[in-house]
Image (cartoon, rainbow, N blue to C red; front, top):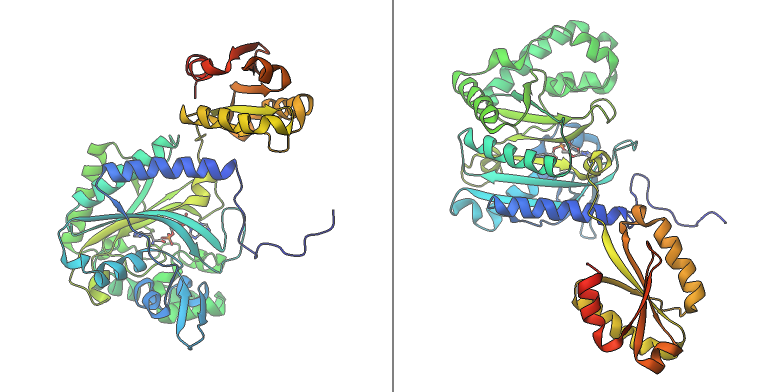
Length: 430
Ligand code: HAM
């Protein structure tokens, strides 16, 4: 085979069946669960004004500083492919008047995000997030409800051992005072830092706390902790979050060095790390952002939310979509095609998945394909016990019958065409 002329853009990829069906099934589980908690779906545009992200995620963060797909449109307006969805949701609720409406407001989303990062396993330039945002509740009950829902989702996907790393970053004042302390601590040790790290030290020292630079990591040993700068109310809030999570049976632990790579957080921040991902990559992250809506021009509105990296989630999830039965309808000749369509229609009405051999390969070649399907059934998402071939040929036409063969047992039965629905209902479960 010659090399294809066109390839997917670096850091992007195609998602094909049956893997796409596994994703779809997981998404459906999520939708069901979020809806059962009162969440409605929000779909925001993938394109936003660049200024929205600078204002919310933060000018000096890695995301805004070097990972955004930003370009001028034909009129010279600066647009950005969203690197995350929280800013867009906040913008949308202000713009649509929801921020001034009844509270609490619960929204979830699923969709593509874009970051110009170095691609590697589990890290893409186009990736997908499943997220939820809860607005209008200042108390720790919001975190408790949100995280319990999140864990129910993770459990429904077969995760047993995940646990939430939890911290509080306090108020804006906490962060300013803590940032200063980190700067003072690191400055005498900064000679070994790279240029980018020195820039962060000057602009926003908190951004060094999750740096991947070994010199920075070494210098950070023994550095001040945000916990020591928390105000009494943030401390109390954090303690309550932990109590409520324990009561709800949500596994969590304290992670005093967790600050997260986005600037909008206040108080609670959290992440879920899996040992099965490369170092420092999280399956999901989130936290409270009580000032974001106001800072974008809306009313004061407390909020808390999470976003799961769907690519990482599906890479790790033990979950397998329930396999389905399949009826392969094999017309012997083109003359049998109309009847094949009729049979397919009838079977689909009973909830069966049906494929008609549109290439009319005939019984022998049709069965070669059917047996291949049987061999690979598990991989392809079919249940081998519920694979059937249905033959429509000259003999069947003459007698107004159809012949059905179970691929697992090899048993074959001829039934009157008029009794097909009854037979399928009794013997071929969907
Ligand atoms: P984030 O931590 O930047 O937070 O991203 C959330 C998750 O998206 C990460 O934990 C990771 O699983 C996934 N992710 C991020 N970058 C990539 C990538 N390049 N490739 C694959 N997956 C990736 C946010 O985006 C916040 N909006 C979360 C939030 C919601 N906070 C409050 N509400």
